[in-house]
Length: 366
Image (cartoon, rainbow, N blue to C red; front, side):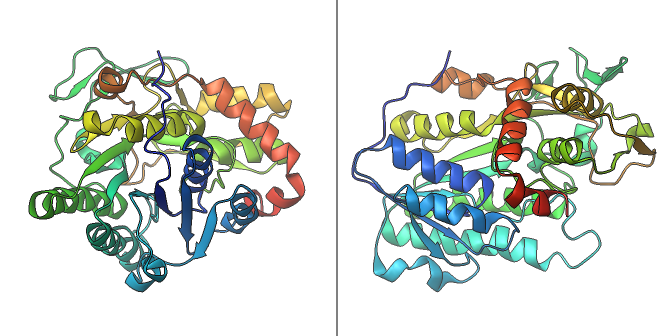
């Protein structure tokens, strides 16, 4: 079953922050197509290399691009124009941010930027869709989950020692007490601010805790965007390393195709009364997940290239063995579930990279 596709209120003005990034640009373009007569504004500081490539695509589709930074409240003023919806996609998304350098940028962007966004949304009486992350769940708690190991991956057991987790994955009721990375902490703090703004000012919002998102347009790096990185290295022949958990490549992530993310956000805007005030986990779940080892084999099949792999057994403090999303709540409300499998994700990444190789290779495999 897929989510209903009826559009939100026609003629709306929609501000997408992080609007030239992978997720933000896809949502800006998707909403421009889906909402009759809407005005879509994409705001981005273009800090991440490759985001500049999305600006012509946005403008060609009729999306207004604003070069601005959520850390600067004035950049969100947009010349005094209001908006009905804010899709908050701006973030420093690296789980490694702050480990070997100051966490100032990730905190100022992900938390300070949220404050500026919420203040502007409050002034405009706008509805907010906040893109959060599965990384709000504490690292040590996730790594306590019971698992078994087979030839290609770690698998969650049906019975789990922590409430909110089953063999299906992690649900919204999973505990959030404990350390989780500066990235995850900044997103969880932003979620809490959303609740305070809702209580104090009546700000309407929906929070989406996504697992890994991937697909065409993702500028994968070592610290973020693993499926895009894996395909790029296989396509163009650069080195890869299995890091952590014994160096076997058996750690698992679920992955949701960016097109499925577009479908979900459109469904939320069109069914706002069912969504407002709620927090939903959303991801690939058990059916759309892969270990690094399985991803390598799939990339080998698509590209015809087999890479040598280095192995590092030590596990970084930020790493998790398995993450899979329990989508029961979001499916129950919207009828949404991922419709594109891991094969679709990797094949679409491969097609995109081959089509735009001259532009993408210097970014993805510098």
